[in-house]
Image (cartoon, rainbow, N blue to C red; front, side, top):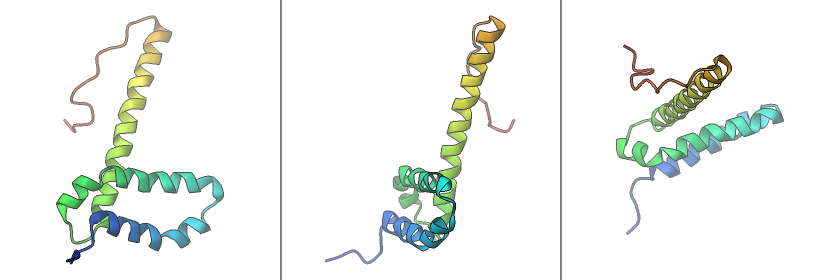
Length: 102
């Protein structure tokens, strides 16, 4: 017996297929960025599939947000280290509440 419902990964692939025309219309320099957004969504496909949301685009967008937030945190930590090096100080310990909104 086959599946009655497509998997989240199938749904994500269908979303990417629907956006293929948009991707082709982008400047070629933006193609890797576009592809990276879907790579971020695929990286969280297990969690997104468990959510079983009616609209699979919503967990895909949240996955992209999570990955971009992670990258921002990494870049901010790197910037702190570089600033500390320039100022002649040791870098401070990362703030566990960074970006927690309060």
